Length: 399
Image (cartoon, rainbow, N blue to C red; front, side, top):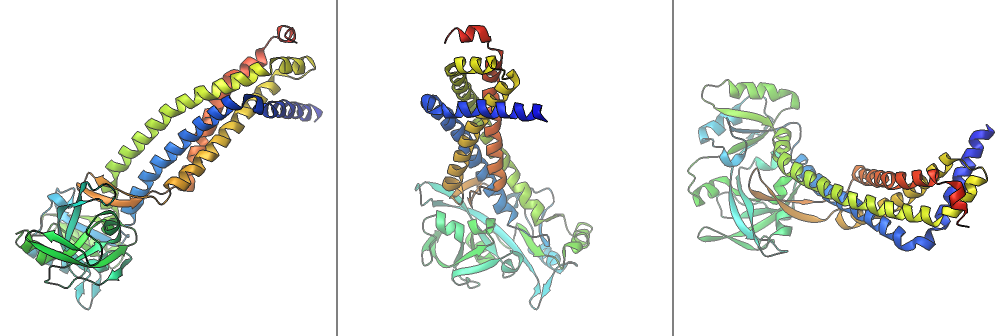
């Protein structure tokens, strides 16, 4: 037992000497810490953007919610359903029922241009025509200000995210649609889902305003339970009058988020890796400086019987301590700056803006700190080996 204890005491002693010498190398040490901090902050920040967008899409649906589109359509924008088809869908078995009929909503949407509050630049915002059942097929729908629009009137309800990000959508404001100005009569939330990025009005009113006849693009509906999905789907896909595809809303919105989250994640990881290479060189410079400044000290310890393995481990530990410090600071900065930050981005599936908030999760913080540790290991290994292989005799001659 004495052997391992002695070796650990050697490691502790050499590591302590190195850490106590940091004030003499403060410039290079701060350079390494700041470099690693920047890498972690950028990685966590970019990935939190992808996480926030993914969360918005995931919050848009529950397991018992479905969407029906024209067969072959990947998005609502290229889908089309007749009024008769929407009635058949609403009458299909497996749907939840209320005193007013099935819990479903035949809907259509158009894209309107509105200026962003932050930049003043125009952005695409979805204006959606819905039926009364729309509030029943969206989880957590709640009017937070104002009221529901009245059917048959040119009135608008606005999602909280859209009201926050785009000018002219505040309660009491007016939005010019076609030749007329439509008042905003209500602001709603929807569990943080994508519906909060939209503007809603009565479907027949929107059809008339944009000369869409009695056509729709999709039907949103709620099942009696998640288990009735196949019953509902089979009833529609085997009906010769129908040419539709039936999806769980969770699957549909997951597909909608795939492209943008993949793009954000790929770019974020690429940028972080490029920065990480620079951080590794900064760590190498710092640890080489540490070894050079302690040449005589390390040689003396080796002459007194300290093993080369203890020297290697101690230099690696010092590098890891600095990396962890930089990683922790970078993670903290990312959490303070990015978590909950609201913004918008283009959903390339629907070509409209989606409002969302960055989400810095514990998993992302852990990934950032893990990357910092990897940088520390790569930055410390070569200097550690140099310190262990240093000829004792030649190093002692520097005394």
